[in-house]
Length: 429
Image 1 (cartoon, rainbow, N blue to C red):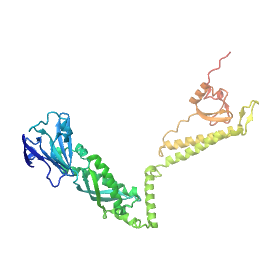
Image 2: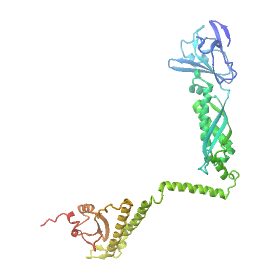
Image 3: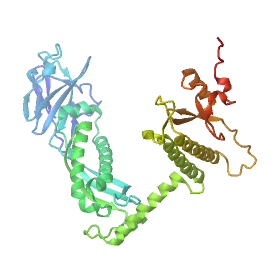
Image 4: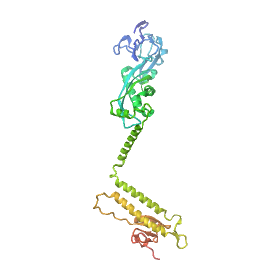
């Protein structure tokens, strides 16, 4: 920094002589921060020198926040308000003579490329063909970046407390996360055998670079100029690697042997057996459920057969010539099937709900159920409470034909002892 004698006092030459920097703060008289009361006092007629590839940033602390003026190099001349849009709009900060204006001056090097080395320690990666094996993989390489959007960079960083090492550490953390994610998914996304992943390093490198360009620009406003993954290393001493290498040694050369296919099928069967064991347990533990399932199937089949009896008026006998079909064959078959269905369902439910060793448990209290003849076909069976509702709705009359298990033939509803109380008493005229 040099001094030029001008009217009204000393004038400054504001420039950066650092040979290697990314962000550098100017101090008057070569003094460091805090050593001079004139640290931010810049006098009129001072000289500003900005080289090609540099940007000088003048930062003003205003009442309504910080504002910046940017001078993009090359520039070499006396400071004038016309070069400072923010400064020229501030009344009273710059007068003729030696009255200084207050600003912090930073230089940003847009030509400087910064290189960082990154390393991803061993993490597990799964082969898409043999998901039973997780092999430790490590990655190392370098990445370079630079500043292109200097205004975005200033918005994203506090220049006053800027530290290149701090920026490097933050960028490195982001690089490691992105590289790890891309490498972990590379075998499945690109159909790459895990043992041959090193042969696809160029493909992975390209995807990492594209991904990092977007991420680092969004987060740090830096432009990635290159990514070089030097190595993708597998832990060759790991047991999973040794086993995987053994069964996939010929895949990389395009050879697929029958024993490899057999091994793959063996692994598939083992996985399926394990999943089946988790879902079903042992056959002994699920024997009751199995019996219930089979019994239920028989019951459903019987019910379907019962519902189909009497279709197409088969065996109908017209009583009274009024078309009121009554099918004795269907009724008798329904009695037989109904008995079988009832016994089957009752037996199945009893077995499913009764413990194997419950010898002293009293038998289930029987529930009386009746079938009701409707249009020559049996319907039901219905419990007494349901029949009461049917009486109220008029769908069950006192002379309706009903049958329950144990009856030799169908009879009128009002003649059954269990049903006598569900019909309203007849009103004598």
